[in-house]
Image (cartoon, rainbow, N blue to C red; front, top):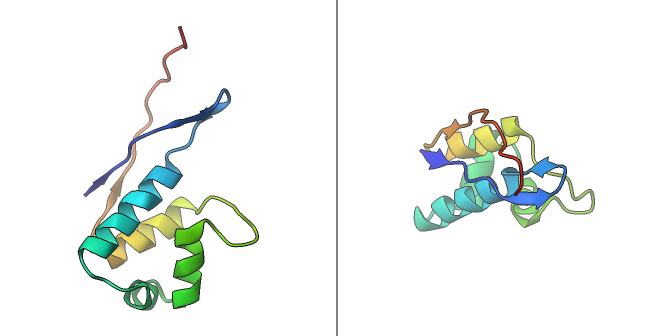
Length: 90
């Protein structure tokens, strides 16, 4: 199971999605699973998976949790997320 590692992105909060996507791509590559295989499992195209992995193409938006969950499932993985209080900056 992939673990979510949060990274501070700005003073407005935290964004763990890019780190999670990087973990999923690493898992895919280590397992020698192609983008086409992931796409087939997600019921999408290989080019859509390539755009997802490269950061979203022209629109440059973060992937949804649903999309990441589908991607993880295509790899035989799950995603575990939890809500935790943010500690005040010192």
